[in-house]
Length: 391
Image (tube, rainbow, N blue to C red; front, side):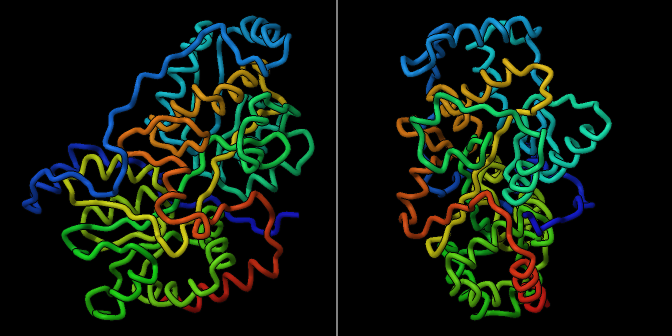
């Protein structure tokens, strides 16, 4: 059973900082273009050759009948997601290359919990319009998937070629495996925060310089809760660092908001910030904004993808799920800035693969957030402790 239930955030949805705004801030700060130092692969996106009409030999012999059924559905697909358009663009582009008969794809950008609330509301009125759901709200996914009649029963032939964690729940696969980072303003925080412990040490050394100068992801939302709950469960000693950091913090509802305020200098650092929406800020900030993977515990939250049981275009939705977790699809996922996890994906500038994360912080320090419910007593114990540390 899912015990963690949160209302929709009242603040605006996250939005990536525009290049012009970032450049203007950098100019005001008197910076020159020096580039970020996140250690990402400094190569442009490689060409993603799409083999239209060709499928791996491990696909079912009658897979082309599924393709034929999709072609009869009119070439449309509707996705309810909490994923930015720039993340989607290469994926949708290459899916259309794979299946040229697909000409119209709508991918909404909702809040992580809103994906499910919208789906449940439409289900109640028999007005379901979504084909595919995408969100990285792990607890909300667990609740949603447990409800009868919400997800299609489909097992992709690609799953057998993927890591075990790719199958998140029955009917739910991992589109990406996105790390949570420390974001920081390089002009205000000259010592790179390599870990939560290191950031806490900086706060302890000069507490007067950090008062209300750290933004932290709000744990009253399902996504923020998932981040920090799994961090503290896997690394109980992290509570010591969190206590110090929270004494200098203000909560924010999204990684986008945290990134914007760190870039603007309202915060010296942001904890924890999802890498995907942060990388465009790194790219466009002229060196003013950067991110780091905490070496004392990097939380990785898979971005779940499932097919609606009431999908208006069920065959097309199945093709889409298969594509996203295929080799071709995972290359497009990485090009869009999300963290692909399939072996053999070529490096892309301003993006991290799951393998990159493991390489940088060590397998023992990667915390994969499970898609499962958290009992009410554990939610309360965590929340009470967290709130007691906020000043």
